[in-house]
Image (cartoon, rainbow, N blue to C red; front, side, top):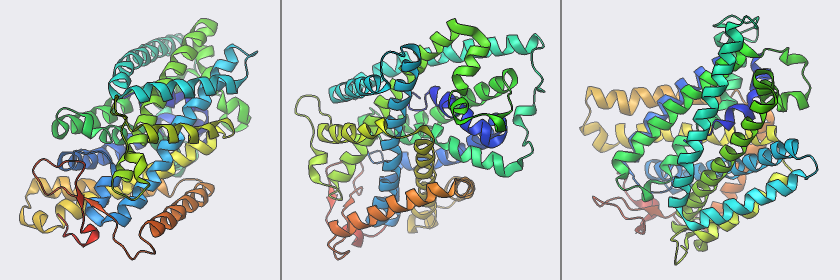
Length: 445
């Protein structure tokens, strides 16, 4: 849930409102429908493969090592950008409160703290997350109370259901907004990467996936709806600076300076928690890929005392330094590109691995048809629709990143002459250190 921090709503608040002409709630509604179907696919595969790796592992098992690597490589782009975007907003928002201190000072300080905390281990991250979630829920409640107070006082020109309409831009604009908002739902993918640290992964991880998607999504819709009722400027005429600061402007309109100060405090803490969880997830994804031999094996080294993938954590922190030169819009678009690409592959993996496989054909029932074919097929169609609604520039950068992944795997396999190693899940209780030496010559399971 902290990975799906409430701060995400305000980070993209102005950007998506401008794309949808003030219909952010409609975009979130479309996004949550698509993400619930995809969450079903994640939960289904998390029961079968309760190990680290997430979309990478699922696609690897269904389509082989090459497809698994490319999927993991694409979603790696997300996990690298999410800590960056959180470090960026921490610097921006704290600078608004303390203008004499440069943004980069706050950004680097947050980066170093996250590095230390994640080196201490996942249990520390979990303890911090509960406090951050509580603060985020409190912020949402206060926000909605102030928004409803303003609406009931008659200080609004927007109808109650207008934020849920399509507006003049039609469904195309709503789909474009929903595509950007897919970054808000990376929480269930982040949960699935922590499977190896759950006490009962086959039971707990699927539950956590649905909880993070449903509860987080409803909070996003509520904030978008009440915010749209309370604050409805002419989004098309706003400058880039005003669009980026729309979240702060909104809370200032509702509660003045006191609520703005409270908002910034919770926003910064939530962003810090999201950065912690994001870095933990990407380091474990690097750990899984290093363990398989598709990335340098030192990434799979664990700290002798804390048991954390310390080399991977340090590498991620060094890459996050680019947050000092990036802008929020670029980061948001790139996260959405990687997220939707990985979501599409996970949905295909359910159908390939559980419905069209030999075991799937032998065990078909009405339930398996719905869970292993109908739901993932709907999810795949929705994610591809949203994916193709992104800005063309996003496809250029995402395509270059994907091509780089192909080059890397070509080097690892020495010109594709060697198979990419695959995890072996043939045992009843698969261990994460087993490597299928037959690689892609193994029969699909």
